[in-house]
Length: 232
Image (cartoon, rainbow, N blue to C red; front, side):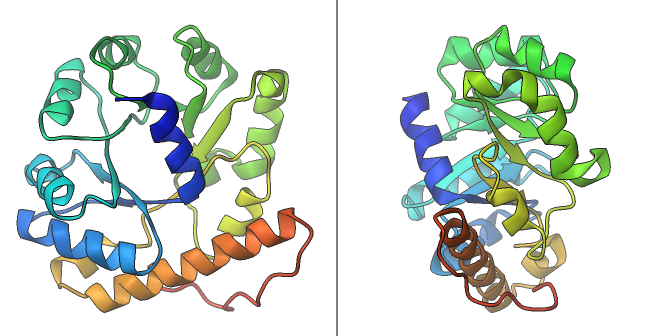
């Protein structure tokens, strides 16, 4: 699996839906709803027994979706993700053992960072795409700009997750540090359980519009007006 190609697709997607599924049969409908709303990348977290089978179903039936796995905290989980066709992996922290297994197996992998020491440990493994977690409670974009400044010349890209919403995602996306943003609000666990695919599609559409507006601003254009309240 080509890490450069995979992470280029993730950067182009701009928004990664981060979600928890409790039933395998919900995996394909939620992926389809996100895709119809314009969100082309998703991260299924390994917090329920349904996650891996759900990913396998998505890879088979919704091949257009860039589908990866998060909350990889043990080396053996890397192998399990590859067995069901996972396209990338993400962890909440920087575990050398997990990163080593991902590199050895060929799984495109973005470890989690929250401090300069985390970044330097990731650099020891030539990791250039990093998850910034938990983003907002750690100090948000201003904090990331401060800790990322010494490494900016290395071309690192960050995917913030934790406290991101429709209302603040645009600010993050206008920063050159940000490769993409992760959002759990796009497909909340309860909406998935209740099968509210239309609501999830609407949230994806709102996020896609916010992404387009942020990119227009970065390019010097004028965005459409964002909604005054978060979409659910």
